[in-house]
Image (cartoon, helix red, strand yellow):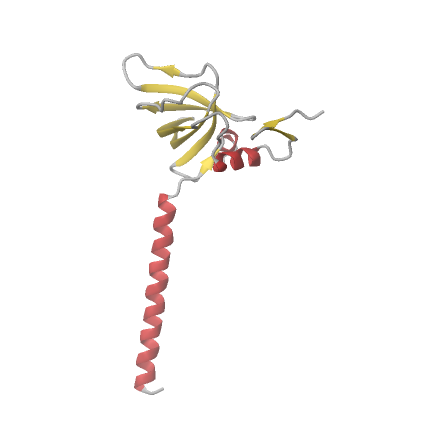
Length: 158
C-alpha cells in the first residue's frame, strides 16, 4: 500500500472512531436526563429498581394528605388499581392538588417510600397526561376496561 492511501485510511478510521465516541457520549448524556414514568404497581413489582430518578403517576388517595404544621412537608399516597405508594414532598403544592386527582411526581425511592422533588397536578377533570394514561393502561393489561366519556374505568370481571 502506498503512503498516500495509508494516510487516507488512517484519517478515515480516526474520523469513524471520533464519530462513534461522540455518538456514545451523546446517548449516555441523554439517558442521564431521561425520567421514566411508572405507576405504583409497577414500582412495587420492581420495574423502577434500576432508575435513580423517575416519575410516579397515579391518583391521590382520598384522605391520605397529611401536612406538617411546622414546615412545608406533605405526605400523601399515590394509587392505581393494583398498588399504592407513600410519597413525601417538601415544598409548595400546585393549587389543583387534592384528593382523587391525577398527579405526576418526580423523585426517587428512599426507605420504601417515594421522595418527590416536583409535583404536577392535572388541570381539569377530563385531562390525563398521555404518558400516565398509557402507563395505567399497561398496568391494567388483561382487565376489561369500560369507556365512560374521556376516561377509562376498570370494570370487574365475573
